[in-house]
Length: 269
Image (cartoon, rainbow, N blue to C red; front, top):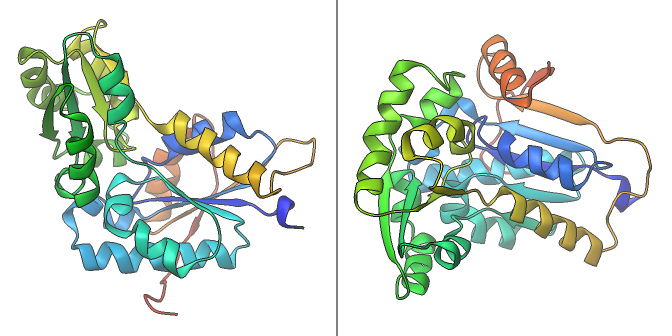
């Protein structure tokens, strides 16, 4: 039955586990499939053509695994490839994007900082968001090279990570930002150290909860919510070396996980 099939989730690496975590909270009875394409992380360093082709290959893999819906848990893949994905695949596709709307609504100072990859910040989808909300608030954008790499290594709190966070976050705070948008799914794993650097009065906006709720709405509308009463399961794949991936993914998921090798995915069907 359609309702008993799993949900597929993918990201350029392990960052999408922050979205998977919210999906698990929102949909405790669903089976989940997760692909971490860590061999090519961050997607922000890749060409648009590569991101599009790679995203299609991963979605094709997840559909072959039986996925009844897909979550694009990667802001860069959303900005570059989501339109193509929706045109090529007939399963519901829910995508993440920087949460400028709630940030603009909640800022007290009228200044919002956006932390993201250069690819996300330069995408037409993001620029349209800025055009929509910049009339009411001042939006400061901050590329964050290095954030993804530190999370991919499971390095969330070392002195070098703190120094990197200070370098990218403090200029936004000095310029009046009281709200920071986490524009990459890797960044919520740095939330504790971002809070320490920015100050507890600065709000961090993570769109993962909204994505999980939108996924629920889409499944409900299509009659595809799982009807079982037992807890759902998770399966994990990676394109990176398995031992390192299992260590970091277990760390971020907060219990041991088994990770399978994604293997070589054909870029064309």
